[in-house]
Image (cartoon, rainbow, N blue to C red):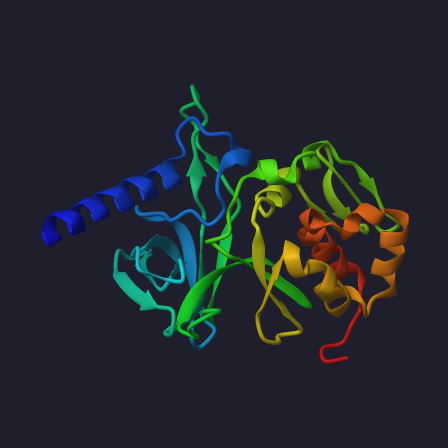
Length: 257
């Protein structure tokens, strides 16, 4: 019975991964961020010496705490390599999506993964980096719920003193930073995130502890306080990733300060 169960499990994982890669007839905003490509897709790896190699990437479907721990890299000359999370700095992959009735694929944004110790066991894994900066936010792949938990955000318009957010315009911060709505929306719908401030230890941020951690994360930046005064709803957990983006762009805070 055990070999049969193992085979069935492998088939299920393969189907899930291929569907995640192809996304037939899916809407872009419905794609779960961090989907596993079973077939090779456009990507890159960052070696331990800092060198970046471009080619194609697929996952080995090995996980620790639901984070991938091994990938395959296909170089442009046809060579295939396998890398564990303790062997490289990180990797990236870009997944294509097909809309129903349209044979032309839509290439989504590159997803970036970093080699880090897992939150519970401390085992090297690849975590998807949602936001990079003084506050770095990583995906908790086990915490995806549904976007319905965050009802209303697609109808929200926020006009801050240093940023704006809406469905039509996406997130704009200052004169140069802009992310479209879909890039922001794919980071929402998770019940928790792993967060590091100024390169420090990972902290699990969720709705239950968000109010307590808010000051630790953002309290050293007066500009965030001004944004909260202007839009008190920004204190809600569903806007965490937006506030983190604003913090990284607006707040000039030295590491360890």
